[in-house]
Image (cartoon, rainbow, N blue to C red; front, side, top):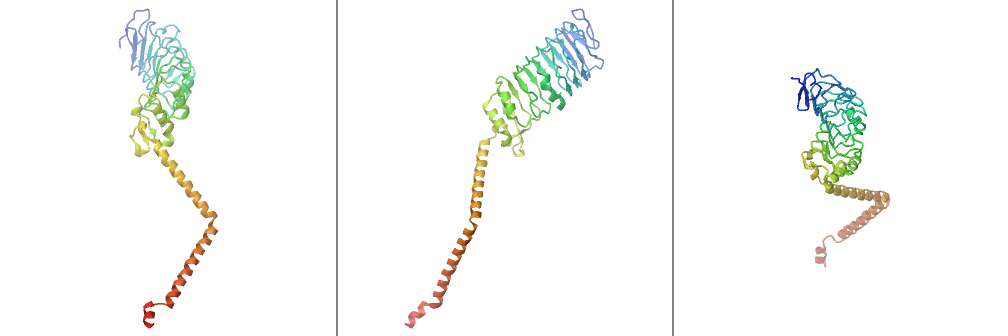
Length: 313
């Protein structure tokens, strides 16, 4: 890796490459935080450098040397902890890439002072604990427009609401979402300009789980990849598009079954309550049938062969 001086007074960090207001440090175990970069640096790339903890002011050691930074990539660094004010001093940062790490502990003020952040990539990086802490940590990002949460095995949207953001795109692909409940759909519907991506999730297409989500897909244009959503359950519908599932007919058959079951129950109750009268009625019918058969039998014995009688006369 080459190291040389940029067009200002600071030098390129050791084991990094600097060119045209960009600093790139990759595949190195010698990068130490806090990291000092030239004042005029706009793009900083620190990929695969194995830093498990982002300490306070990790990229502005003196509070003055990172004001011009616009993009920061921390991809694939095994980051597990983000401490309070880790990005303080990066007032002009627009893009932050934290993908492919393993965030377990995210301080509520981890993203403090990122007032201009527009794009945050958290794909393939959140553990269950990190996802639970995410909502409060993102509260300060009022200008956030693009949030990538793909590939995190999420079962729900890990945000309490969207009113604190200016989101135009939310990526939830490649997670473990089976459906969206009423609260989540209500939150999404309040921000109609936001586009949501939900493909490659194992959706449960049983109508008792799907109905509200299905209606939202039909009546809203927020889900940009709705045609790519597939059913994982029930297994007989696997690979079926979620949008094409028809729960109305299923609901009508279920209702018909319920009505018929109620009629059957009422009928059985009537039989049970009138069991004595029914038994008496059946006995009367049996006696009447027996009397009638005795009459026919008597007549047969008296006149067993009418032809012989006629000959005798």
